[in-house]
Length: 197
Image 1 (cartoon, rainbow, N blue to C red):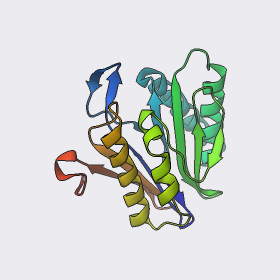
Image 2 (spheres, rainbow, N blue to C red):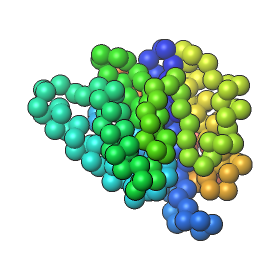
Image 3 (cartoon, rainbow, N blue to C red):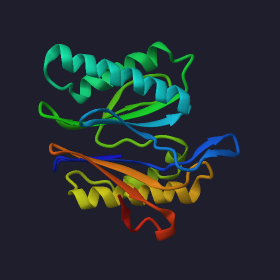
């Protein structure tokens, strides 16, 4: 996942869900919309992260109705963090929250297992992340344009899929700007080169 000063936020994930060595789902969508321009990337227990994302989506909907304005990414991250930290002994949930809002622009927040909250320029998580720290350190740069950000996230995910047995399937992405969200899908049979709708 990536954010550049150009106002482009690109979030991506593979699509494999595993239960130990068994691949339970090859085409999971790990990117979840919780508000119009706020998305989360989920890792860990699919049931835990889906439940947390549903609760946050509901809370953000209430926030928008009560305050008559959309929530900020910081607000969404704080709600995610409150739930994750309050239930740290019961949840296996790693979450990355990314969003664009008029007040703060593009932002990325990472909530690893245990429920701490970290605002970062970019964040990676899940089982494949251990294989791509070096790639991200070597290739990350501030202020990427949209095409660069998409290429960076796609290449990072390709590396994770290549080296991690628990990662695989398709690459799903969402690009967030002040104009809204744009979904991307890349399939392995084209070596992730062709964008599908």
